Length: 236
Image (cartoon, rainbow, N blue to C red; front, side):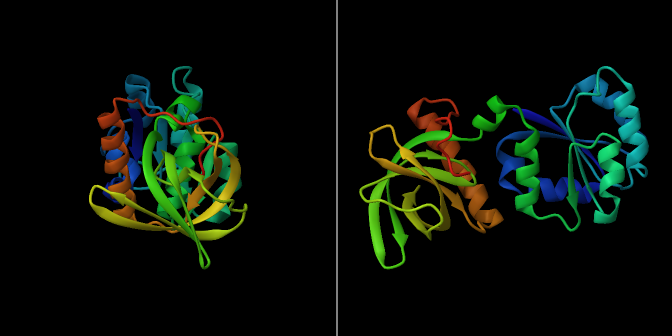
C-alpha cells in the first residue's frame, strides 16, 4: 500500500478518491487545518505528497521550502496542482511534478505513477489469463490478455496489430461485457510466445477504472498471485 499525504482542502481528497487509484491502491492521509505539513510528513513518511493551495495549506511555496529543509522529508516526491503561470516557481522550490489546473483524472494518475518507485508502479498491475477480442476497424483479432492494469493491458493475439492503430478491446469481466477504446503502443512476445501488443486504454471513465481496479485485484487474489507485470510489456 502506497501512502499519499494530501495537502489541501476536502476537494482534493474527493478528486483523488474518485479515481480508481485512490480506492484500490493507496492509503490517503489528509493534512488537517492547523497541522504542520513538514512535521506530519516527517512523522508518517509518506511515499508521495500531493499539494494544492487550500484551507489546510494557504502557502504551498512555504511548505515546499520547509519540506526541503528537513533531512527526513527532503527526498519525498512532491506533486503540485496549480496555475500554469506559476510552474517554474514551484519546480524551483522542489516540486517533482507540476499539474496545471484544472486537473484531469488521467493527469493525476500519471503523476502519481511517475514519482512512484518501480516496485510500487509494478504493484498496480496483475498477471491475468482470459480470452479477449481486439477490434481494429472491421478486423476482429482473437487472443488472450496476460497482463492488465488500470490504464492498459498486454494481450497475445492470433494476428498482428501495428503500433499506432486504434481499436476496441472486448472481454468478459465478472459477468460484465467490457468494451474499452484503446491504442496499440508497443509490440513484443507474450508468455505463450505468441505475438503480443501493449495497449493503452483511451478515455476510460472513473466508473470503468474503478471496476477494473476491483476486477484486477480479485483476479490476482483468485490466482494467488501478487501484483506483477512483465518488464516493458504493458500498455499502461
